[in-house]
Length: 219
Image 1 (spheres, one colour):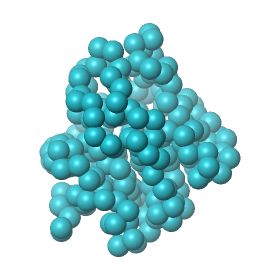
Image 2 (cartoon, helix red, strand yellow):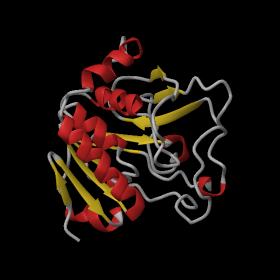
Image 3 (tube, rainbow, N blue to C red):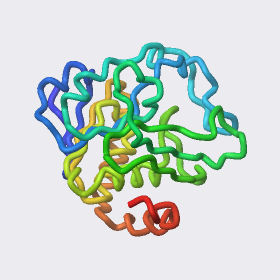
Image 4 (cartoon, rainbow, N blue to C red):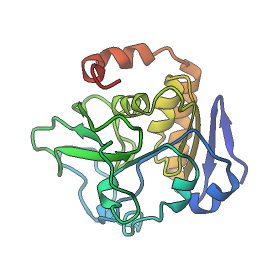
């Protein structure tokens, strides 16, 4: 199936293990892969939008070899679940959810090789629609891409989900390649990225303003 082209975004519907070998190297791989913790059988947090349980999307840890080969710069959310595939690092990104105990975990961890040492962001999820059971808030992904540096012009997300990484990339004026195998979420990602492309950088300053104190000292 041919990719969907939306501005500076190229989106593929399909299995990333089949599509990745057809792509060249990119500047950075920034992704939130399945963790293999059976989140598909969990309630995914109290007070959150309900998602249907079931399916097999989080029953196994994916092989990250093709993702690693696609770039020299990487960020894997949930990297603590991939200790057998990723080398030891001190370049963790820690998202403190500020959620007052209303989720399974107060923090989420991303393994990176950005060379910036461990960084921390406190951000409470509020007011943003959740389109995917493991979706990250947009300001968190904007922060994440900022940490990757300006050299990360073309960003690849092999486990695109609802497209938040792509929205963040376009808002920061970067190019994006996304792969998602579930048609439902692919369509959501296309819609969100199309809106981001139409808006251009209109709202990036607003996003930065909302999290400026969180960015200070981390850039």
